[in-house]
Image (cartoon, one colour):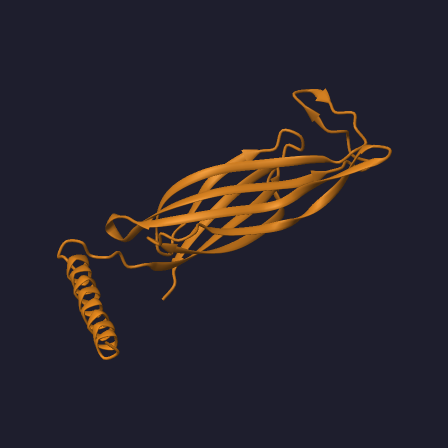
Length: 191
């Protein structure tokens, strides 16, 4: 009896190993079917530049670089850059507002060496007029507030872009300051 139990266990282990090896082999053969070629991931460098103008005068230029893998089914590439601004709610209470830039990107290969680049872009900044500046106004109505005003810009773009190309994706005018914001996107394949 003592010899039968170890022999029986050994037989179970050997047969179980062969069955699982056969199943793994079947999965490997099934996954390498012709026509089901796995997409190759292409690393991309995406530069997003925010350029702000007051009339024709350039007053700021903010570049951000985001690394995106085309045809990668992993997480979306993201950049978060900013700070938290304290805002007084009442004399005894302060809350914090996130201010800065958020970029989210995803890319896929398209025809003719181009890429379909999807970007979500958010940019916010604080506007607090100095004593020499006029108060903020929207639609001709003056905003009388001692607290800072948070300006926000959001856009979602789907660009068909090729390696080395720069596209001006968005142009917008801030209703408070009258400044024009231009967003340029450049894509480069990382080799």
